[in-house]
Image 1 (cartoon, one colour):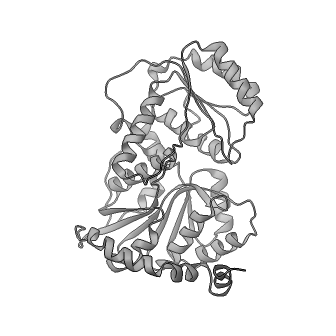
Image 2 (image 1 turned 180 degrees about the vertical axis):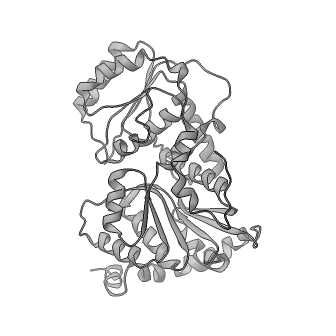
Image 3 (image 1 turned 60 degrees about the vertical axis):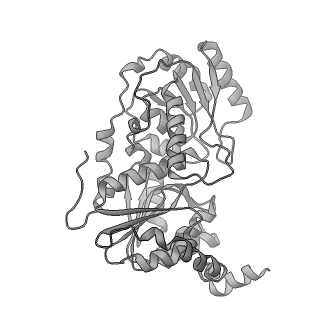
Length: 373
């Protein structure tokens, strides 16, 4: 057993990290404290912690959408702190924040549970770091492969002891699971935050002609389709569509941290690609969401858990988004959507935005809230 394991078993994961990150905390304070000088001290502040700065465009879209959502619904400063930077900013936040007034939001997505344990531990560390502040976990999917694991028990203990914790699930399975795992926390059901995003702010205003199919299928631990099924899909598309067929992904390789300006540029380029397509084939949650937002017909498969279908339920009335259970349904769905008049597709942003009402209320202070929709 290594030193870290011995410390973890003796004093717990948070105090172990506190010792390991001591130098980073002090160095980070010297490096980042000037960033807080321009904030209005007489205003509330919302700190968004753990925002994506890596090459997953779905997570980058979450970061952008939640930033815009909070800016539209919060009466004060909004500060983003990227994932991996928590300890660098710990002392700055503790020195600047007013626990009676300010709010901490944690990045939404699909990383609650043990599949991406680093993010679950970071959430727990935030709760132990700021025990007296209101903490909001943005819309998430939760999935534990082992409900009795050490991490699950640690998360339950941590969440239980925070007195002002608000969890948001983005689909019904996670809503039920969060209420079961964390009965002491406030839990509510809202859509994935990217469904609130007005993508027209990032799209070229000049209309373009749609052509071809764009395939956006997973090739990671969450994939559900095997090689034979993917071959079947490819052959079926080529039998129906003569226009170019391209393969892309919502994950890109990058060797540097992605800032806000680059984030918007990457999202703009990907959304434009979706809007230019005749049809999208995807098993990625945000592949489906990007198609919905851009009015692009899409055939959607499930991944290896419940999140894609769960989020689909929020937009199941959109006639240009078709969710299917198996490749047997694919040829008929493809023929139907390739003959679909997509010129009339309009994403119902105002109707979807209303579904975030429980989420918006948490930002109210002295009855303040902007009425964007």
